[in-house]
Amino acid sequence: MIKKNIAVVWGGYSSEKEVSERSAQGIYEYLDKTLYNVVKVCIDHDAWWAEFNEVAYSINKNDFSFIVEGQATKFDFAYVIIHGTPGEDGPLQGYFDMIGMPYSSSGLLTCALTFSKFTCNNFLKGFGFKVANSILIRKNELYNPQEIVERLNLPLFVKPNVGGSSVATTKVKEVQEVRDAIVEAFTEADEVIVESFIDGTEVTCGAYKTQNGKTILPLTEVVTHNEFFDYKAKYEGQVEEITPARLSQDLTEYIQHLTSEIYDLVGAKGIIRADYIICNNEPFLLEVNTVPGMTKTSFIPQQVEAANLEMTDVLTEIIEYEYNKLK
View 1 (cartoon, rainbow, N blue to C red):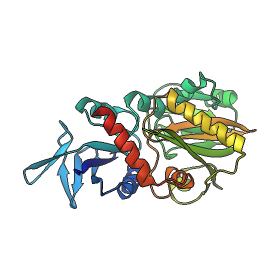
View 2 (view 1 turned 90 degrees about the vertical axis):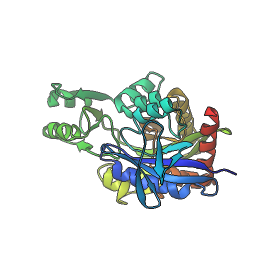
View 3 (view 1 turned 120 degrees about the vertical axis):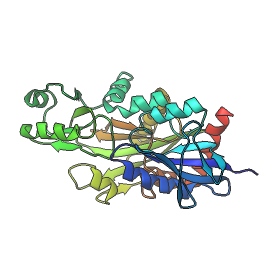
View 4 (view 1 turned 60 degrees about the vertical axis):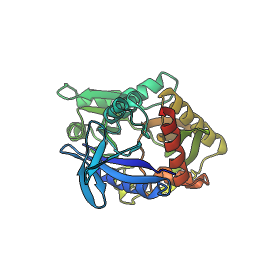
């Protein structure tokens, strides 16, 4: 049997590059080495390179190959694990589409839609999903903190409209804090979303699709003693993650149903994750993540384990399904 060459593509141009590197290592360890030759590929502003036998080799962007001792190595499949641009917002998927490379994640349109929290939430709101009230502010656009507070009330959240890992996200409790929070959010993106605060239980639900159909995973309940589920809670252990979530069967199945609907409405591929806040027994959608974290302690691996599945098997099914669709 000839092994497929799999590129685990990490890096990117945002502050989430460090998280992407951890996720890439997780994917690298999960992938079945009896089926695949696995090579990590880093995409950075300065260069694209393959990490092969502890040496960095430049990637030929014409066909996403690299040369070792005069011999070109071409990839059969790209597993995209870039959090943030250009792997979560669509440009990389567009490039892979152009060169005919099958890949693991959702496509260009889906990634562009879901990466903009404001656009995605308002798109899904049109289909009846409950979301927080929000305001979008673009760079160099005038805004009035007092008017924002009068419209959304306090407390409220200020965060980059595109981005993740709760970077540059602030929970604002006083009107005089609004401007500084917006300025900080603009350090990460050219658009800022200001959202009303919803008090409740935070949960997240993963889903993926293979030749066997769609699989909706068990929910994870997120409990943090920080002000909210911020970067430290996510990556420095200041959080309790309970899988499966401590919810009634009816509410669990309802949120799984919503996640399945989202998967289809946005035209997702591979693994996605949808995050919710449950307030008065009603789930409010927070955001949709098309490139969820894949470290050993990330939500998706926890949910896969709770479903009595193996991450290695899940990734193999996704790769073979997406690969065969193009061949």
